[in-house]
Image (cartoon, helix red, strand yellow):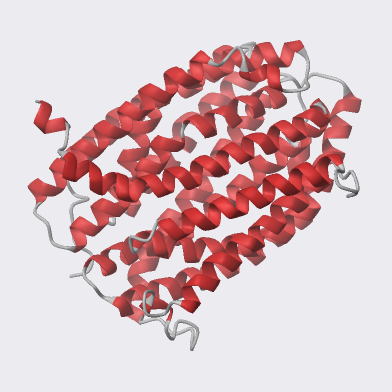
Length: 460
């Protein structure tokens, strides 16, 4: 039983070789985001509410970019596993073009409809002046953040290709530098230190945008200066040509991932809007909760990426079904274990963490309870995340679409909508009931993994 679920040193050495740089990058990114969030929180509850709403909406755009690159990334990992540099080049070219298109499209949508989208989250019971203030701060923040859409999208195309080719160090380094730049500029621009103007939430937005350009410069600069180590970049921009067969395969396999990320993230945004109807205090409390959850979930989310990369490379290299299943079972065990450990850590600081914010006692007390609820379900989140990346690694993108976003919109969204509109439930039982839907998702995921239809080599 021990050998069935626990790997040897060589196994964990390989897993950690891929996962640790991603964990470090995501950990630093989320830690700096936490500090960024705290700095904005020091300005006051109203600015924090406006910024958190905008960041929740931008999260939808970010996941659309992630979904667009992930579809082609399935092929990138398997092409790299079979040493096909030309195939990697074509997938990178597709990523660049689709990210460019989505960056322009996303910026246009938010520029035209940003105010209406923010207003959806300010309908709960509370002071009308507070709602108007949060809307004003949110619009100021969004106006600057729009300038970071394109560099973020293009940097994602470079970073994802490098990771899928086994180079997780450079994206980690670029991410670390970018978040440190963001942190330093936040301190200077939000509070007006070293002679800089005191810009508040606009300073936070400007710091983030500058850090996006820094990250892109590091990634693209290194890749183009080292073509011998990044053969895919040679000739990548000579033409927009993509082989018809490959383009069709990427669209068939990849577009469900893009649609999935768009629907899943918009479903999360819709559920947050349902939560916000329970009162204006819910918005800052959920912001505090999600900030800590994002930091605590770094390990299991990063392990999910490692699962996708390792499974994709094993499938592309033609490893046997028994070997693939054995490695996947041990990766799932590692991921769930990390969810248990960090869930306990998250619960242990639930009473202390909200005290950092410059907000009301009511918001702090509510956030503490929501943090404990989130921590309780973290092991199940870890299992679902690892299952998603496993199914995706074998090209089962339609299945992952049904498993992920369709589940959210068929089960979670109607549940949140009905409970928030047609019952008198407060935010605490509403939040707990909606999260418990993941228990059903775990059962569905286990069934899909057992079927084994995801075990297929796409490079053949």
